[in-house]
Image (cartoon, rainbow, N blue to C red; front, side):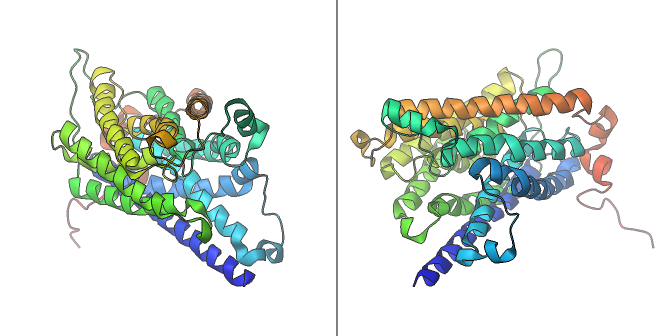
Length: 400
């Protein structure tokens, strides 16, 4: 029976990893549909290569930093418990690899290829697992300190802060250090619109991410016996809340509408196992509003050229999700309790701080010694031809 139970858990976690892996296709198509046509190939290539580099960094360095586990053992040892420890690594890797996938959307259309791969290795190998280990493995005693001080640990069930806020706040310094795309903002204060190049692909990316998110959230339980239908329904309600507020506040703009469910799902990750469905609906609705409002503020008022709006979507909505778990997870508002708003505020601030500081170090050093940005001619021609020597679609037929 034990072997059967372990085998079932292996299959469950493996399926969760596959669903989150599929979300990376969503990241790719979301970016492909948003950037201009001359940068579509680069969007696709970055997501796949970033995932591959993330795997190497997390396998050899990051997983050990987060959980104190390495894989320098025989296959006989690694395959114990039907290889459960290996599929757990795979599942958590798909989370870790979301960090560069998030960053990719912010720095699109003007970042050099090789320096970004180097940044991916450092971020997934060092920065992300440092905070991941604090929250999900109790490293450095911070969770125990919170329990002793405020009566509850920092709660982040599926990564509103650990994955999304960290990814968004890593992206912000990278975007600022790169600067805006050429021609995006004029000297007289005008903003040059760069509309999405392909709305159907953008929508496809959003749908892939949305469907995969149920694996992201529900299967974060990592054991069949720990699965809760509450997580699934809360994910659904937050998705709907984010969509509807983005629809209204975004005035029917398809870019906002298709990012609305993502904003809601980002925010509900942390407390999806604690909230009442109405609390999840409110969490998602606030996240959708926060995304639309802050996207317009950052792009039009602050002149921050965050191409896909990853800082508002992941950075701010993820931070809101960490705080929302402390509000709507409380029994007074219909939640299961066992959370502290103070702990949620401290944990969220900690994630933001680690992410922003780590990003400044990594991207600052790369900018100083290697350079981050394409030269003006390469940027004008587009990353597809400048880096990959091919366009997304053939401009003409061959003559022979």
